[in-house]
Length: 121
Ligand SMILES: [Zn+2]
Image (cartoon, rainbow, N blue to C red):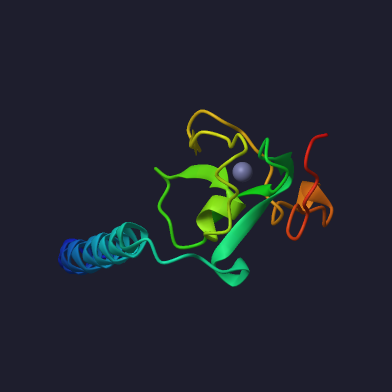
């Protein structure tokens, strides 16, 4: 039988752990925000690609692996700093509003737009 004292002690530990976890997520988000703001191009290793969806320019949609839940899908060429500014690109597609299948989802069966470039005629 768990005593009330044991329960209260566990609750204290839980609150302390939650503070640490919240701080961790805040710092991680801050680091990502600064990284994004710096404008330094991402590499393929930094990015998660869509399984099937392409930007109108022909490159895959992607997002940086370190972003938070409030982020968005974008053109991988833009994220990598290799986008052709003379062609049309996607807008930013927030995760909350677009259900785009990622290459890591098991149901993607290994499909990816990583390395794909299919410009429209
Ligand atoms: Zn594009």
